[in-house]
Image 1 (cartoon, rainbow, N blue to C red):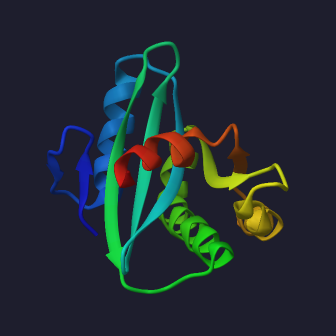
Image 2 (image 1 turned 180 degrees about the horizontal axis):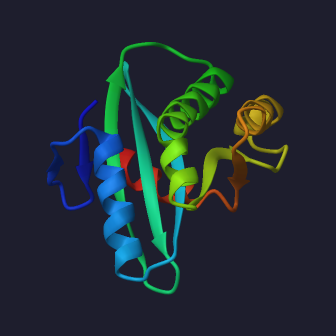
Length: 157
């Protein structure tokens, strides 16, 4: 998996090592961290582009993020695509969760799914919430799910 910083610089280390370095650096500077992981997607012609982000929030001092993009020719219903987004976020959260426990960093998984039943993405809300909570992670949906609905959204649009 190729990851990069928001400025486009590639991350050469495995993502788990890069996240560990970021946590050690930021906590060493006295920053209290919270990490939010989210994925968004956009259908572009025959392709679906996914962007997964790991957003680091420094309490009172802004934040930064790591980004992974992926394109596929797979065709999804809206519900399937929402659940694929959640699965991609959970995959990363699961890979990194022991680091967050080790360094006492709060982590949330954000789903780009609307809590308002008038929106199509709401079809996947119950399953997504069950999947995320069932894995033992904190869950946020729109409008609180900024990692997916704002950060990752900017990457795919």
